Amino acid sequence: METIIEFSYVVVFAIVAILFTIAPVIISRLIAPRTIGDKTFTTYECGIQPFGSAWTRHTIVYYTYALIFIAFDVDILYLFPVALSYTKGSNIKEFYSLLAFVLILVLAIIYAWGKGVFTWKRKNL
Amino acid sequence: MCDLAAIINIIGKETARLILGLIGVLIVVVVNALVLTWVERKVSGHMQKRIGPKEVGPYGLIQPFADGLKLLGKELLTPANVDKPLYYLAPVIVFIPVLVSFIVIPFDGFLQVKDINVGILVILAFSSLSVLSILIAGWGSNNKYSLIGATRSVAQNIAYEIPLLLSLLPVAFMANSLSLRDIVEVQRQGWFVWRWQFFAFLIYFIAATAETNRTPFDLPEAESELVAGFHTEYSGMRFALFFLAEYTNIFIASAIATTFFLGGYLGPVLPGIVWFFIKTYFLVFVIMWFRWTFPRVRFDQLLNFSWKILIPVAFANLILTGGILKL
Picture 1 (cartoon, rainbow over the protein chains, first blue to last red):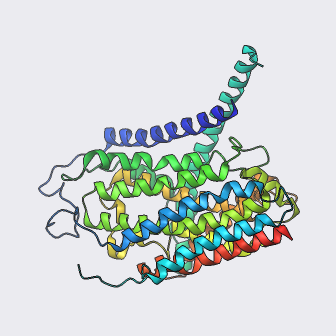
Picture 2: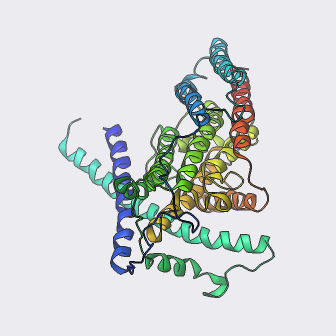
Picture 3: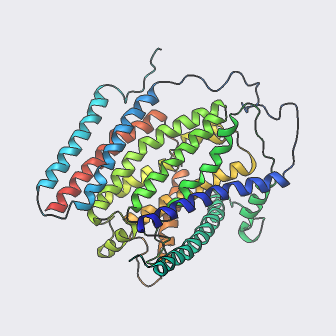
């Protein structure tokens, strides 16, 4: 029951957020002027004649960053449940488990560092 | 247990709470945006030995209203070769994370829309959604500046999300709860900034500045190289919505810092809500202060600063906290 209520809060707020963004756009559409000129609807490119599409290939550097992010983000989310039960018992064992978990994660950074993910040099494709 | 009257009673109470909460949150969002646009221009002005807006109303206080009206009356241009569904979708979903985050922020002991027991996770999960909106805006615009801005924004946001998570985690360890009100109540014994978590606070604040795309980390919208980044092609009210979301995000980032590290609504003499706003707006002022103090960083420096310095330090801080708690 409690969970359903909490979920319904999130859902209602999300719906209101959507309405909140649609309403001003509609109002603006009703009162704003319209112009039709020669170049009104061209893509903005600092005043020069736009050439080509923006949908082209990208450098791969971003991709490797994204890959390590996914691994990290998921792993760190596992630590949030740990936060709730960490001090329940006074056993030192929990500290060692935490240490092991974090050290393995740090190993991932060291690995990526060694592999040269963080060096940002131009790769000749 | 399954008494119908009791259920109806609960639903009635919750609906009243929901509607009141919604009205309150919307008022906070709108007033905050008006105040922040004015404050930003005044602060910028005075830091550059100018006066800032002063013509419209006393001390230029009516200026934000004038700006809002002007934006409402501006033409809504849709360039010819955009990806239309995505282009229209981006400003619609930009507000979802903003508004949902407000559910769990405790303004005062009882002034909280709903104390969800996984409050941190709600905020973190939904704040990742704002990246999606930026990516959709940049991709849908079919503009080179927009796409470069969006790509940078995604890389930056995902790089700084990890230190953000790692700086909030030790606080959850110490408070033994993920509910924001519990975290504030635990701080009656002392604010977390002074109780071991000073470095976590620094890391959080740097990461939050990056997450809200503020200078010195404003590469996604660097006006001198990318025009306006992901919202180059947006005009009129659609641009205003991005703008509104950005200012509300600054407020939320500061409010979370206040809640987690600066004792939230706790403080002597004055009522809690006043303390909450004093602390939050002080942090907002600091973020504006950054803008006129630090030059913009280079992009590889930005990413590597997060991966090589912030994340290892945050891990060390987490281990340290774990050790202290077990002593």
